[in-house]
Image (cartoon, rainbow, N blue to C red; front, side, top):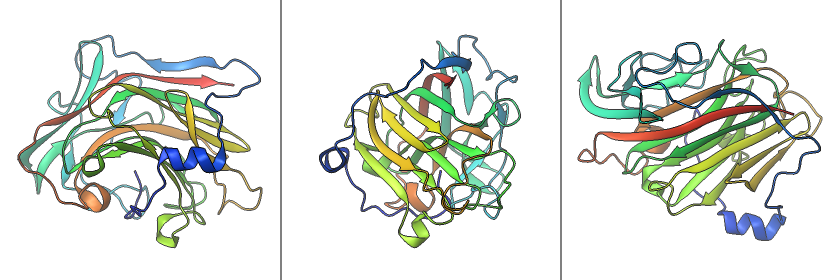
Length: 274
């Protein structure tokens, strides 16, 4: 999830397809090889060999986490993250927890799954309602080039409840970020994002990133071969799944206090090497 408020004047999928004439299918010279996955077949808490947790309310100056969100992220609490009926459920509740009025969970594969390049995909159904902010994304494991946004961020899928018919993909860097109005964001028009599962993916290579919904490519970010300010994506990154409440972007239109609990459902997460 991005560190600062996103611009809401984003291009829809249909506008992108008309301008860029992007092909509908991934084009790869070799068949990707599955190297890591979680199919969520074992009920209970998420697999601790694959997932850890970010706990608390954030560290905005370093790791791109904070955004003035309203939730407290819990760890190893089934009410907020559990596997049930073959799916991971990340669930946000309206309840007092320490100094926050909501609880949720943020799962991370850091030091359990870290990669440089590959295809990263998950099959997800988004939550419903104003104030939800669901995301499937990646952050650098080592922050070699400095705190956010200098070491980069890869947002494979973001969905905010006040814009329920769209999902977004972004690659954040020092040069290309929302604070400068230069961010590499594209929107994909998806009216049933909240009622149906879709596969969200990024194919990350040394020269570019391609973002997909159900194998339809709708955003490409090119390596300009300049400096790490434009392309810090030559280091290892890890996966993140989370559901936030409110925040700079998720709460831009307020938070509906009557909709909770809400959940983000994940059918699987898979990582492929090229």
